Length: 86
Image (cartoon, rainbow, N blue to C red; front, side, top):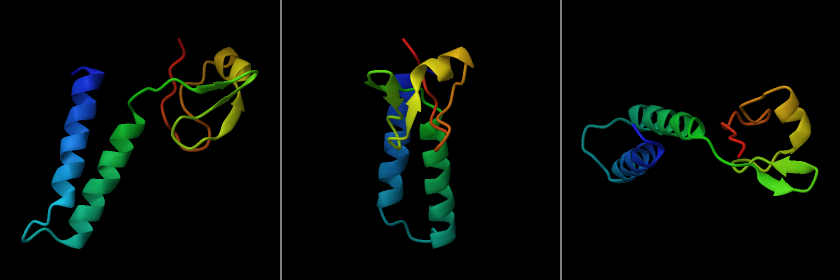
């Protein structure tokens, strides 16, 4: 599955959750929403370039870009969003 297809599928899932469905319990809806958020964090995104520092595109957490590349970290240290460098 391509990243584009994954993003479209998640968008459709989120839309489906916003429509009231008879018989879908609140706890099931909350669990599905949590699953969608977790899957969205696995789609890689470029960090926001801010000079020597970068920011997570998801939560805005600021980090030293060079250290992340040096230690080959693939995820935001704050929220867990997958980071992809160009």
